Image 1 (spheres, rainbow, N blue to C red):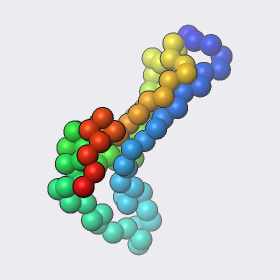
Image 2: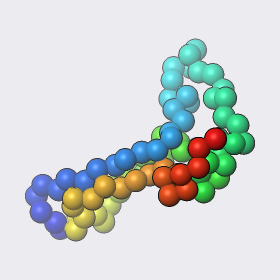
Image 3: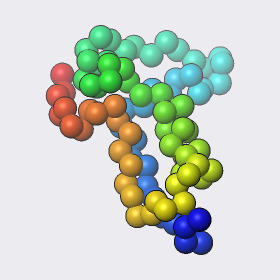
Image 4: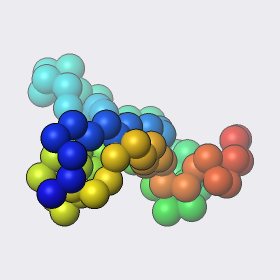
Length: 83
């Protein structure tokens, strides 16, 4: 168990959130192959990618982790290729 108060930060990259809209307002996101190619992992991020890190920080074995900035962007900032 770590300290009583821990502070960590999640810095998300390009996250597609269309599926989180109300059903009547949803549209197919106009993502192209070039959009996905900008990410070394081969796809644009999803809200579930961020939720998994939130779950880890809140409930996982992260008790010794504090003061961290976790970048979740599929490697996009490392690649730095913009089309």
